[in-house]
Length: 341
Image 1 (spheres, rainbow, N blue to C red):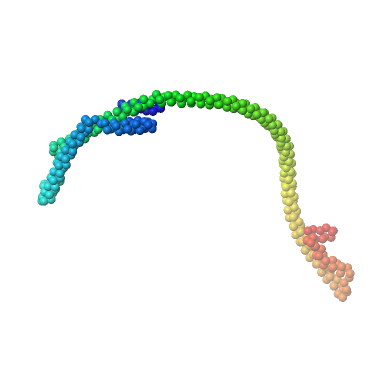
Image 2: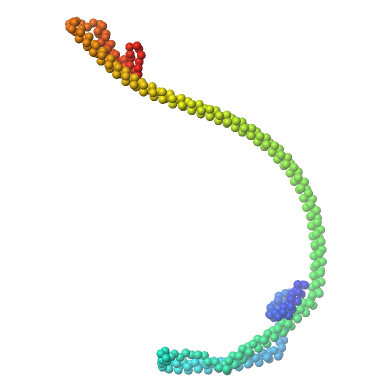
């Protein structure tokens, strides 16, 4: 209710500052309650009906003058149109001629005189006077309406203020009850909070002990793993050393193998040369032996051409013929039982 009273005062301030009457009236009517709104509309109609006779007569007189001058303006426009029509006819009937080497064309130009200017001035002046008079009438109506609204609002102010006091007392009682309820809820919440805090402390302690035992177990497992890692590292180092020793021995064996391969190649070359020498010696011995046998046969034939060969000569010939067969599997047998490849 107080705020509505303030709205009426604000409307009065707006009016004093030169605000629009329609806006002030709308503001005042909007801020009113149901009954006030109906009464404000009726007051607006009353203020409108009770306009000053002086202002009405003045506006009516100005409107008559405005109609007179508008008729004069219309007559002047009709005369000017007739003048334009006449000039147009003259222009179309006028022959075209040259002036200073150029074709002269007639062009219409508006004609103004003092009478036309006076008519326009009077019309503008009368319109402005009508606007000012209407504004004055509207201002008077607005002032009366606002004064009436302010009076009605101030008349109901005491009743509304008493009602507001009662409502405020009721709200104070309700607020006191709410404060008491909130205090009880606060006590209960505090007790619940302490209980939850104790439970949380106990759980935290148990969790700390459990985590400590787990940490100890993890440390023991880590120590065991570190020990295993050290043992594995030592074993790995030992195996690495053995591997290095074996690599060294393998390198020495490879060198020895290369040396033996070189000796084997050398022996192979010597064997090939000895084999060639043995073959050559065998061919020489074979040739000499054949020559010896032939010479012996020739001498024996000279001595007894008809005698039969003896057993010694047969054995010797068989031996000579069989000696090339002693070369078996690439080996050559000699008299002392040795063999050459």
